[in-house]
Amino acid sequence: MASTGSELLEAFERAARKYLSGSALLNGLWSLGQNGRQSILSIAASSTRGFEVGVTCETYGLYPSAGPWRGVPWEPGATSVETLCDEYFGFVRALLSPDARLRTIYRRQHLQTAILELRGVGGWREFEKMREMVLPLGRKREVVLQNDHLPSRFPFSSLRLTEWGVYRWQDGA
Image (cartoon, rainbow, N blue to C red; front, side):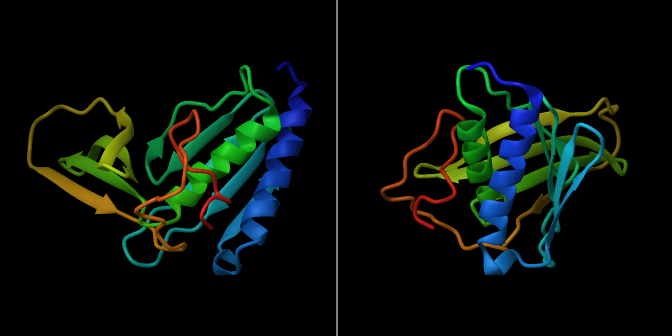
């Protein structure tokens, strides 16, 4: 479904306010701002070994981030901008709960790999991996981070995965 760029920005901002303002557990932890033709959302990390969650909404797609991980863009394609944003915030909901974790691998204090994993009915699965060009020399160190702003929805009974492989925010609260 074709759309103008401002439609995605408006739908994203509406969805951000709907989902994030609707959760008392997230009060004071998120901010939504504009920079030209971009909307930038930032959500603080959990205080105990969590990671910051963010997204930059451009007129043509959503660019997610989690700590040092940068994901591939989510673009409307054949779906409406409203559906894209609703499904994206299902992903955000997972990132803000113990249903997601970020595994980072360092070599000589340099980030080598950031792996975003989501928990599903069958256990943990890799959602997306980001690699940096770092020589594979020196000591390797792995750090696992998880947020706990929102409760887990595991074992996900009665929830259905979206086309993006995430559960919707409103399913199962």
